[in-house]
Image (tube, rainbow, N blue to C red):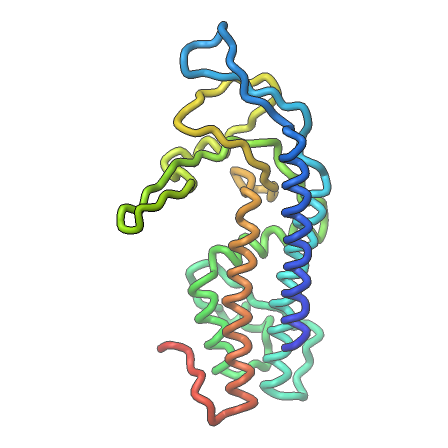
Length: 248
C-alpha cells in the first residue's frame, strides 16, 4: 500500500505545478473586458491576447496518470494481501459504472480479492463514484492523446452569504452553468451579468463541455477517499482483531 501512497503524493506535486502555471498565466492578464459604445446596454467585449498554455494539458495528464496509478497500486496491494499467491499482472482498480455495484466482469479486475476488501472499495465507490468516473475518462484519453486545455470560458459565479456566520464567499452559480459550455473567442460580445469571471479548463473527448480546472481538487479528494478505505481494508487483513468495518 506504500506505493499507492507515494503515487498519490506525487500527484500533489503536479497539482502545485498546475497552480503555478495557472497563476503565471493569469498574472500576464491574458484577457480584458472592455466596454464598446456600439454594443447594447449590459454587453461588453472580451479581448483575448493569449490562449491558455499547452503545458496545462500536459500537467493535467500527469495528475490523472498519478491518481489512477495510486488506485491501481492500492488494488494490487489488496489482491496480494488477500492471498500472496495471486497474480496481479492484470489487476487494476475497478471503476465500474456510476451508481451501480460491480458486476462479475468488473470484479475480474481485482480477481482473487477477498470479500471484505472488496466491500471497502465498493463503499468508497458509492461515495466518490461520479468523480472517479471523470478520472477514468481523463486517464483513458491521456493514454492515447493529449488532454487539451480549452479556450477561456465564462465561469458563472455569484456571492453567497452565510447569515449565520456573517461571511460571504464567491461560488459557482449553478443556475448559469450553461455559460461554461459556450465557447468564447477574441472580440466576442457577452452579457456582463452580475459577475464575469473567465477561467481555463480541459477537454475530454465525447463530453459536452470542458472541465473547469478546479475539478482537479475533486479528483484528488475522491482518490483520497478511496485510498483511505483501501488502507482500512489492508489494516483489517494485517490486524484482524482491529474493528475497521465499513458501514453496513
